[in-house]
Image (cartoon, rainbow, N blue to C red):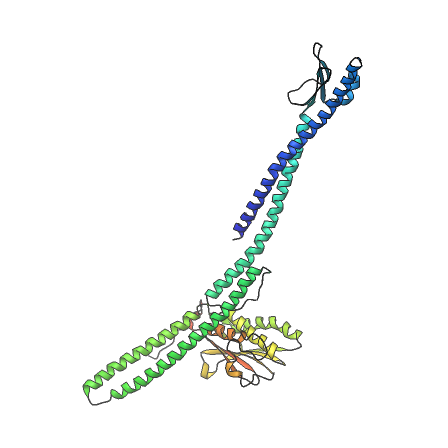
Length: 430
């Protein structure tokens, strides 16, 4: 893209410079020769007038009176009269000369010739000057083209990268703007699309979750009824019930596999992340912002915590929670990370809390809905944060409304998720 922009601008500048420079150079050459010819014409007219006066008063032609009109060392004056020998004054004739002629009233002709070498030299200098102007114009155009191409190409690459991330399921907002109206419109459209897609994906995932829950409930009820039928005395009915129960169990296994595959697909960019390292770096970025507002950011991280998550999505989601606590909360803000405990051994929990007034009761059920805000903001941040966490197979919940505490539940990496690590095989009893 940058190369095409650069070449297009250079081509336009070069064509324009040549279209103006070539006629300008030709005109300059013609002007130099025209000025020389006009000067000779004035001189030869003056000489002819002097000769007319001498002839009219029967004075002999005196070349000493005419030498002032002949350029010294470069001119050649020729006076031709019928029946009289030709009078010559000045240099020897050369091949390339500029000439001007005038008639003598009392019959005759005066020719003043000038060696063209100095004229050609001046024309060459003028042509070189025009060529230099053209080259400088193209050079200046090249600099402008490079600056313009760089200014246009960098935002275009950034927009392309954002579109690529959006297609990969990264719905983070990007506040970067480029001071170019059209590109800023594209950036705003991408932000709107990211938010809309995040909400759409969230609704679809909620629907999938609801459908899977309903299917699981119906399958469980069906399995219970089939298990009851397997105990009847009728051998045929018992055999049919057993076969049906096996099919229901297979259907349950297929449902589990489909749900697991869906979770893996949406978390395709997730990887095992050291939460202590990642959250420490994130806290350092935000600590100065909180300090500027006269508030503290306290971090408590359990050592050795690993979560399967996309680092960029994690930073954006936690950043939204910290920004929400900074804007709408009060007092010190705490960022903690710990294990899920016995009940949630397959997950880790990140909590962001402050000591503010909390979330109103009427707002709490809709705090993650798009456009819902209790303080006049856009109401997009928390909805986007939940979509980002959900994209990696996690969950974002409002654990307590007073004091406000947001909890992010992230899956723990499995053995197959950690590359380059030799996990011990599970021992089975002999």
